[in-house]
Length: 321
Length: 302
Image (cartoon, rainbow over the protein chains, first blue to last red):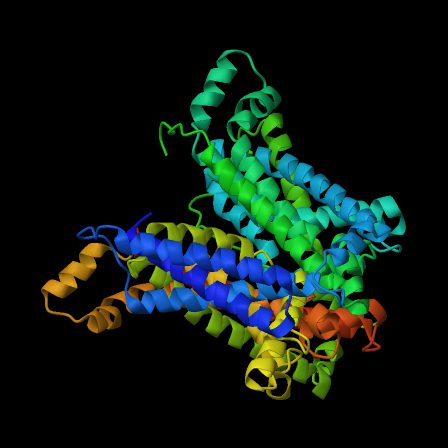
């Protein structure tokens, strides 16, 4: 780490320790003293190490205004996370506990709604892959002139707000329509899955298309055709394994978007995780904060997986771009 | 909610758009047909159905009554609040996001910071909806950490001058996903500002201020405007955060529409469709502005 980086991290730790100290002076939670000491000492150590390091010429030190902008940004984005976590552990008068989490995790409705959301999410990912991969492959290989149209279609879910989409579904697929999906539980589940496919379409398509750009679709297809593979085989056993990393990125992004979704599921009367969270939020004080933390960890986990995956992406260059 | 939409330019198609029909093979058709079918059944038809429904009365006859009925004070007010919240969060989000993006890219900060900020932006721009409302209630709500610490340390009662369940409360909360979205979209554009331009300007004797005034901002301008309209549409369609934060006490359009779908609070199904049409028109306008400006902007950033 650079000298500037060390000093900056050290100062950040020191400021954080001071904030925790203020919190301790307010509520006298013993655990905070340990945290203040640990983080404060670590921060001071970093500053000292940084100051002892030789200054390298030409090393960027950063301008004052940019540090200031960055610091204010950190404050705005970390404060709510810190506050939410602190709120989630103070359910008991006696001191910090994780009881809010145990209460939430032990709640049957939490388990049911969470599992249901995951199932719908995975179903949406599978359907999304089956729809998008062949279409993107086809457009790239044979119909590049269709590209603008397909891209526009994949952007529609960003243009049409989810509430409009679900309102349209309810009117179009209600019990008196030709395709009465909302009549049965299974039909409504299918409708919810398809709605999530639509929500994730922009991200899934872009991820798959980026994946296809990094491989030589033309050559792979020609080679496989010469060896006697049909189109299904080419897609499933040649193209798909080559873009699996990109597809998985799209899948995790889909999961991140879908797991906490509220509007569509609520209007289709499905008990998903998002609807459960809203319910808890309307009736409880501390559990919502715990749920927000859980939800943030899930989003962070999904995005972290994408970061991790992109490191393993195959780096073969296409013959002609 | 919207994400980093790296939309390609909608270039005009030359020649016959149905050229692909010639020499079409069964395999090709099977590859694209499900996608097309899905797009028609679950994107186009439901939306068009709503647009048409806005012009139909109870017996399915053409009418403009639904559109005219939008003129009640309640509905006009809800559109006005929605536009103000979306506008404020878009403008502030764009400005703050731009400053942070400039800081991490051109402010000579250590490289690690840039990567962390970009990764965090990816997470935060997806951290919306119900949990975001909980997070801000725990921070700035009546029992929120910031509120109680300010009161204890400085005797300053935040809840007297600021209410999380208000216009500014909602705007500050929306900024949590608007700023990261701005950073994600504008960062590539700032990368596109070449170092040589700086050097050229400096050689000609330009001050940093003059560089930004005559080179930097004009080049970024289309991108800024485009992203601004995307942020606006993003906030305009959002409902979960506002619903969890304020229940239905803050009268914004998506919440009004939500209540209408739930229980026909406006006592006229056609009026619901008209409300939806209003939302479609506004978000579509904002997004069309984004797409058009983006197509123009890409010429500069090759």
